[in-house]
Length: 187
Image (cartoon, rainbow, N blue to C red; front, top):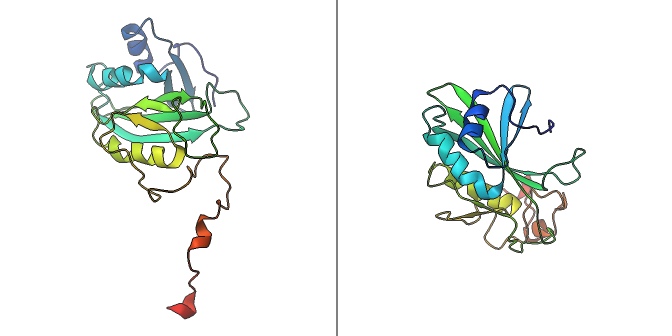
């Protein structure tokens, strides 16, 4: 991850956000032409609403919501998990990323609901976020407050873990053993 700096990098959106939210703790990174604004979880929804609505930004398209697990990452990060919003402004022909770091307060081996792994849903801003937020929830266990239908989307309802967490074993925890193995001769 690129070094996090005060908002002095080149993307025009950084100056607009800094002017609109002078009292917020905002950080910025640029790496290979991608600009990322780092905000605290409690401030993310209002910053994202501003980026969508302000005439100088008009990020009218949410391309993706992504989860990242930074466990054992070689550089220091602000939290173990991150939720990243990939925004596009068709009006200004710009792409911009907003990142929120979250640090778990409970062990991450199971499916316990961790109060530290919550962020506000952006489904009210971009309805298309519904499925991508569900994927982040299913794979990483990050929950989205006020989501209209937060349930698993890629695994079954009672799946015993969140499989994209880096402390989840690559071979699984026995989930595959419950299925019959079918080969070509069975067809």
